[in-house]
Length: 489
Ligand SMILES: Cc1ncc(COP(=O)(O)O)c(C=O)c1O
Image (cartoon, rainbow, N blue to C red; front, side, top):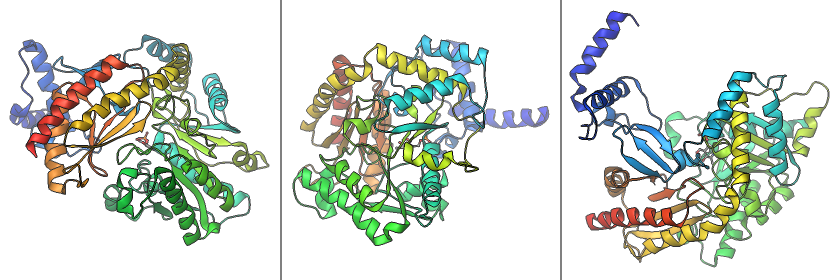
């Protein structure tokens, strides 16, 4: 852009710069100016993800987070918040860890970049070895990506090629669950079960099929009446039904999260994954455990399948692997899936420039060291029941219908009528979630997620370092804001 054009653009936006969030008295004049300047640049140039830009255009400004320390984040006004979502289910060991920054610095100095395309570097090798050690069964082969959606995309591509290599070339379809989120690449999006996120991009990669999720709170609406255990069998059997509907010779894989995030933390009923494993074995269908959120301590284990006692064929992971200090994802696969690639000229023609980036791999190794040294997994296992108990106390509020989840990963479902479980109309959800709750929670000092991809839920996934005192603090904030929300209904 020419200087003149830049200047003109700047003048244009200065004319509309009155929108910027008013700086509180705590900001000095210079700080207030810097904040206003950032807001202007964001308004003029930044395109946020999954966000309505209309708020920006209308001049509402955007919260700008400038710093993190432990389980707290700070905005450009110097205000402090509890990071109730670990950024985006990412910052397992908390913000501001010098060790992780130092590991990144050291690696960048030594070898800033080299790809894994026919070459390797020590940190990727060490990390692959370490992940293979943590992974259950014979999941011993690690294929790095830069994030979760790419890991999911890689898993589908691998499943397709694997079945071709072993003489079942028609196996290409994938099954996943209603409302589940598996990422945004067009393959991963075809596995995602949220129509509202897909319709504008149709037609997507063909071959994605949906079965019911494990939302026991809403089981009756799915036509199921019975115990939780029976529900687990019922839900797993829907996978078998879909495999039979589509033809086992055409189905490549089933993608499931250990605890489904979207819709508000649906844990698997007891026996669910055991039955799914049985079905997958019976029909020669690969079981993919999408642990992009659930791995690396979120549920108190390195890999969440361990928490529910099943061994998948593929694990997809990302987020907490580096605690977010650098981006990285990993697909980890069983020996049998790797074996056909060990012969002759066969290759998996798939990869990403930045996958397994040396800096990210170095950070991941340090992050895993921290988790081990500080006993993070044990800490989560020990404290998860206390976290649950704190959130369950909120059930005395008329708006709180259900509290569910595992580890440090919980959802609170909000309802209009607790007795009937009646949920909100689209209008009401819009007013309640977008219009009030998200902002009110943030203003009260809690960054978390008010989500309506399924029924309206508040989601919590804080850094894995917090304990009972912080659970009480979170409960206190939720209580005051949800009480206000109830009163507004
Ligand atoms: C289960 C699951 N799979 C895949 C993804 C996509 O990961 P990414 O945003 O890193 O591409 C997510 C992201 O939240 C996820 O929760």
